[in-house]
Image 1 (cartoon, rainbow, N blue to C red):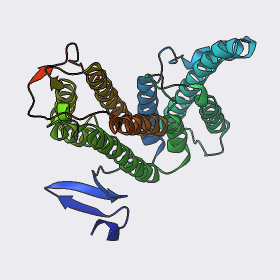
Image 2: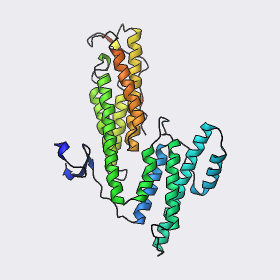
Image 3: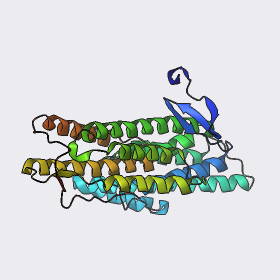
Image 4: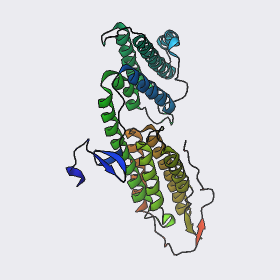
Length: 323
């Protein structure tokens, strides 16, 4: 049974190497060699990934660090200071990546670089300060920050590459669990509604596709199968239009439109989480609470038979926010 399997257990399942963490089998990738070149590539990849998911305008080159710091320190407006701090965090991350790149180049030229070298220390200090300022940064959706992404380059810098990969598998398992929780909430909230009969398979399809997206690296050839399936699953769910009785009440129409908004936002949240490959607990709990309120109100509204004549709710065809 799954609860008897230890985290880190590896097996070949359906011809694919898998590793087990916290209830999920995840596709296993052999970690690269633990050297400065591997860490440089890993930190650069993590930095690109970070800027891909946070709000726009933060990818400030490392050579503009002094400008970014001066702008942050002189800003007095609290709202603008948050954005200036986020920009400074971006500059610090890029400065750290610049330093690490030069350290690797020096090492390749035969210059010995020790872990306590001044350049290595400066790189670590940049990552630490960026992590602290990263609390000011929001996800591109505007809902919350992604502290996990801000901490990853620092962890990649500080610990062996193999240990970093182990931590990533654990984080992917947590991400998959969040996706399942959101899908379960959508099913519990919508599957019992007469005007959304048959929606559960579409919700489960999205959850499965999202979990597949979480475990596959973009460099894996499987991405050409996994990504289209992920996008299409979201599109199908968003096209699932509610149907109401021909003489539906205003309350039933209002409720159907509310349910459509839950579908749209649930799809968007699952997409954000799967692409970032880290949990978004604040956004998830906010969404779960919305589903709970929707179900609570449902108990006060008269039900109608699914066999009644129906009419589609106008203007409820939704479009996915995938990308």
